Structure formats: C-alpha cells, structure tokens
Length: 256
Image (tube, rainbow, N blue to C red; front, side):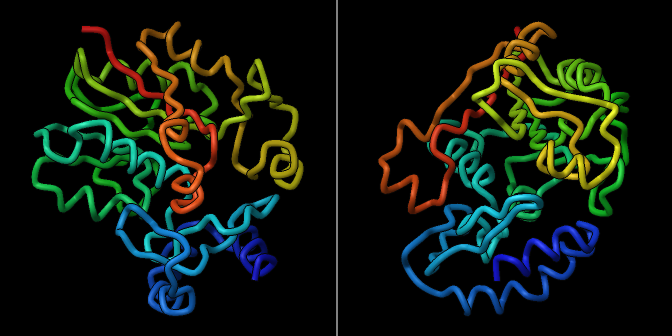
C-alpha cells in the first residue's frame, strides 16, 4: 500500500489525484474503520491513517476522511483551542485552499471567506501571490500554508501578505520545516525534477527553509510567534491525532 501511494503521487498531477480522492474516500473510511486514531477536523476515528510522501513515504499520516496531513490537524487544533477563529466575524483570505479546510471554512457563517491561487480550479480569485489584487489593510486573517516554498521571490510574496492584512490581523504561514538547519537552502542550478524531489523533498519545491525563516518574516515586518503547540499536548494526544512532535506554527501579526 505504501509503495502504491508513492507511485500515484509521482505519476499523476495533484488536481487529478484530488478529484480521484473524492471518489475513493468512502471506501477508505470503511477500510480504515477503527478507534486507534482521530482526525480532529471531522471527529472521525480510524484503525490507522494512510502513508504519504513524494520522496520518502511517512506512514500513518494521511487522514482517510478529510485527507488531512499532520500540519492540517495541528493548525485545526490550535485554532480550535487557542483562538476565537470559529466564532469571531472576520474576513479570511486562504491561499491554495486545502481540501481538508475548504468546504468547512466556506460553510462557517462567521467568515467572509475568499480563496486565491494562480492555478487552483476552486479558487475564487486567480492571482499571483507576489502581486495580489486586494486592497491594503483589508483582511483580518490570512492562511497561507506550504505555498512559499514554491515561490521564486518569496520575499515579495511575504511583503504582499503583510500589505493586504489589517493592522492587528493574524497570518498563519506554515512551510515545510527542517529545524536542524540554521539557514534556508536553495539552489537554482538544480532543475531536474527528480533531483529536486530528492534534494528538496518535492519536485516543485524551490528551497528548504531553516530556522532563519522566522527572522525573515520579522525583517519584512511581521511580529512572529514560533508556537510549538505539540508541547502543550500529551504524548498520547500527539499520537492519537497523528501530529508531528515539535512542529512550529508561524503565527504572525501585522503591527497595529
């Protein structure tokens, strides 16, 4: 099963796989029925989760019902337990909307929900993250997860995120992390997709962010909290929700 998922991820375009997942989800829910692990996004429990990964497969991480990964479940739990995100009226801008969140955010009555992406067929606004067509100081909340590693000029993208966020607003800017690295690694000379997948973890990633990512956000103008929410959970909870121990959430605010 593990090998099959790796082949599929590398063989077919992501939009096609997303469409196919909608068909097979009911089957996965039945096959993985159980109580050992829980997806907090929809509250369903399973005997195990699916494997996931382009280069190296991580076992037991892909939620059968929401198709959430560790980062999605971590963010959901943080928003649920530490913020008023689910009750406070707000304008939310969501970049490259993830399947685990899209319909749920769309149905939330407290959100004025806008999605944007350059290529996604479900995005409300087709836009370049480096040149956003939104007013300055417009959105209360931004969610931009695992996007910046795809963007050549990530500094300009971060400046645009800061621009469209209201003073005092919150931006959650998750990226793939290698916290053992002090500095971010990128090399434009590596152009072969197989080499990029091997070195960067995915064929369309342009860099591996290190701990200096948080400083970069601060230098551009955000106030940044490096939140290790897993440290507030028990080991049993981290395993039950299938989270990545020690993953840091970049919780960013625009100075008032």
